[in-house]
Length: 452
Ligand SMILES: NC(=O)c1ccc[n+]([C@@H]2O[C@H](COP(=O)([O-])OP(=O)(O)OC[C@H]3O[C@@H](n4cnc5c(N)ncnc54)[C@H](O)[C@@H]3O)[C@@H](O)[C@H]2O)c1
Image (cartoon, rainbow, N blue to C red; front, side, top):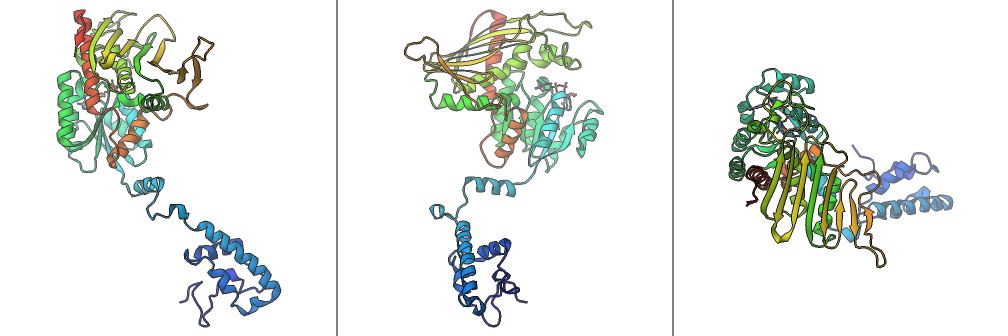
């Protein structure tokens, strides 16, 4: 059967686009477009050449009308041809990226720990393109099935071992309390799974070192969810500006984070009492929320070597839990880190305090400074003034945290699983953060700086 556009017996193409069925009626826009697309890139004027050879089109009126149509068709054809300045047959980056995505498979995710943050992971991974939560685990009987039912996850377990045996699970998110991060992480890596571990990475430096070693031995990605803040728009922009030298030599970073009443296990997340036990959580405000600031600041400052750590901690702000439950972690911590090259980083963090609006994050260099909330750049004063010139860095309506949080981490993990760059806070950097926190507690306990 002859297809439209193929030569007929008399050798002329019978294209509807040429108006052959209704003499005098020109082709429709759609038909013209089809004709243009059909033209071979090497011969864009086929259409124009052919119309001269069709007998009834040689009438003068028709000739004029069809010349116009042919000219338009040529223009459309040329428009559709590839840009000769980009004549390479290789697709550009965007095309490559989308091809990769289209060709990429969906990754199976297992969630270990179905508590507060486990649920947040489930929601995040459900929204993440090319990720599917296929299993959820919790040691408390009944907890994982409830989450599985709510989010339509096909399997629920009380033990993570069967999840690690499954070939359709590529990545596990370890969402257990800190005392239970180490074993599932190492077991999952040894089973060939990529691991996203919740923060804090580990309770002790020794555990963290073994987790790093397990990741290296397995060749799998191991990253920590303390990178939440690294993925935010302000952090990414600040990192870019610092790396480009916009601040000159960076010599100081400071983060202050004071909650008024935000003690987990008392003021919030009241059922998660493990937060209050040093043995289960590793510490209080410093390891729980200070960990984010240490992670972010060291990264922004270019991961300098930490030379020494001095710290103080304070416990006993606000009423204790009325039930007499173990509560032996700090509410407040102050930390000073000396960094190689003479720079320093200071951190104040509190779960409880009697002050407000003390959430500060700033980085100073000898040619400029950055302050978060909203991200603002400060440059040297103009000749006659003493105040620094300042300007907002992010566009209107773009919050500091845009693009960050767990969704930022999840997207980065998919890219990493596709063979792209490793997700942020890799295990090696999490080990450094663990060392700083460990040194800070040691300094606070002994009243002396700890040299790393
Ligand atoms: N809650 C938050 O807002 C929050 C935010 C960021 C990070 N985190 C971090 O997430 C982790 C979990 O915190 P959470 O608030 O979800 O605690 P949670 O107590 O609400 O949940 C932890 C769950 O892990 C389960 N679990 C313990 N050991 C397990 C094991 N071996 N295998 C399977 N399940 C096990 C527990 O039964 C519990 O259901 C902590 O490291 C915490 O620092 C929590």
